[in-house]
Amino acid sequence: MKQTVVPAQVTTVEDRIVGNLGLPQIVLLSLPVLAAGVVFAAFPPVMHVSLYKLILLILFATLCGGLAIRVKGKILLLWMIVRLRYNVRPGYYVYDKNTIVNRELYNTTTVAELPEDKPEKADTRRRTSKLSVADTVRVFAAMDNPAANITFATNKKGNLYVRITEVNQEG
Image (cartoon, rainbow, N blue to C red; front, side):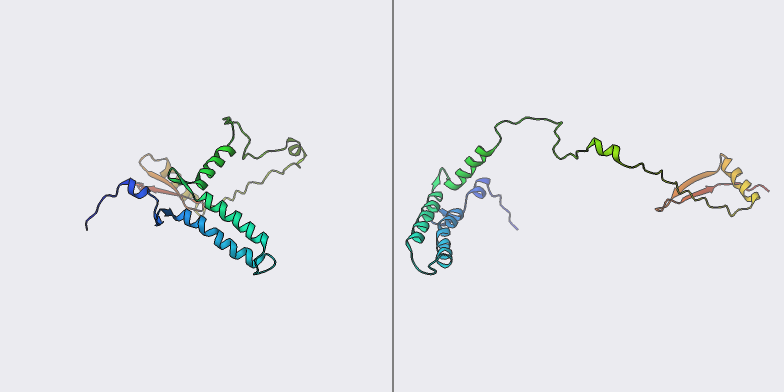
């Protein structure tokens, strides 16, 4: 399959739909037509021509037509949006890393009014050994042996398992 590189200038050009009109201009010029349908269907006298409906629609069509004019490659609506964002922005930017925005504020008086919490009882359950005394002594002796390879492992529930390998049996 043959592949070609498309220059960035080609991909950034706004697509023209009808002549020199782009999509935003077509939308702006078609809004008065849709608004006329809504105005004639919603405002009284319904589906009849009246003077106030015509004046309202002519003003709206003039506004949309004016916003669709292209100046320096951009429509006037985009220039107005840029100017509006510029005028709405803060005049000064003060950097303060100690700001309290998005922090939880705690009232110090409510802390003293809280009742005293009872200490929680530690839940320690010890399992009794099932080994006899002689086996227990042999296990402790094997653990003390430096040649024994002792590994400790836990499972997901927190149980501890001890494995002792390389124990020489005496006897």
